[in-house]
Image 1 (cartoon, one colour):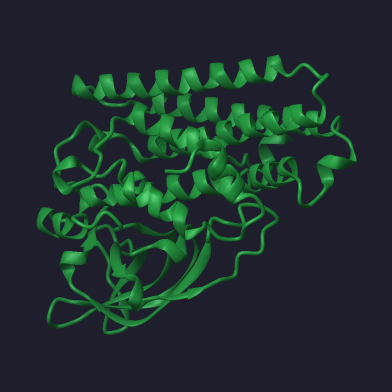
Image 2 (image 1 turned 60 degrees about the vertical axis):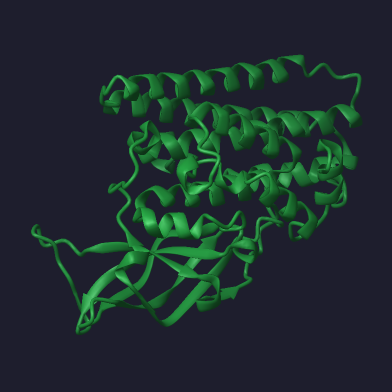
Amino acid sequence: MFSFQELREKMHGVSDVPSEIINQIHQERLLQIWVPKVYGGLGLRLNQGLKILFDWSKIDGSLGWMLTLCSGANFFSRNLKPEIAKELFSDSKTCFGGSGMIGGTAQQQTDGTFLINGLWHFATGAPHLSHFTLNAQLTENGNPLLDGSGSEIIRSFVISKNQVEIIPNWKSMGMKATGTYSFKVDNVKVTEDYSFIYDNFFTNDVLDKIPFRIFADLTLLVNYLGMASHFIEEAMKIRPHLNFDFFNRRVEEAMEKVIEFADEVESLLHDSKLIISEKQSEIHDYALNLVESLSHQILEIYFQLGIKASYADSAVYQVFCDYFTATQHSNFRRELDSYN
């Protein structure tokens, strides 16, 4: 097993996660932190998983982001029929990943299967996935299928990697090793057993009841905190005379708050209390304001680091680019109108 520092050194300047690190991740089943134990996963509580994602984001932004989104996709094990989930996750290397967008169609066939076609973007971890998840519009004879209220029906599907064409088109300044690529599917037939609906669960665990917004907010937020902590470590090496205690305390206090939120949410759900919209809004607003504040502080510190911090091969520059690439994720990107 590689140490914290060895992992960081191996991730410096790379455009793909090295195979030996992927092997370690599989050995520790870190991509299956949210997969129930009954399927072979770690079945961690929310606070336990968040601490792991923070630690790996602190090692390297690309690593943390890939782990977060791929383990998040593996959460869908809970939405699959038990026999399918047990079969898939009996392999420690099973890893879901894909796109949350609606990028294609699922043509319903007379035999009950679906014919999938389409193009989806931003599938993190694409080179390392065993299966791709996607959202598609259900159609029949070329026409959209509608529900009782007249809305188009969207279904999610799991497709094996050998049925997908990966398009390596990630060009961002940061997160270069996340493998965030587009993928294309042409006339792939999928049975209903490999389709799922996000709100329909076949497991009975408190994590099943966590609203998606809260799960997304907390799992993504720890990535920003981990990268921010790493940024300060590298900044101190360049300007050791500067006092960054205030920033480190900010990150520590924020992480404590995140764990407090996680414990509160699980406690409420254990008591069968609904997570009301006010609690979701409280968590989201906290995370949104925190990321915005951290971003401004990181910029202010970066201005003090000098020309060395702009060297493309420097560690601090890599963390800087990773962090501000991550801020472009829509989850915490404040609408422009809110500034007016």
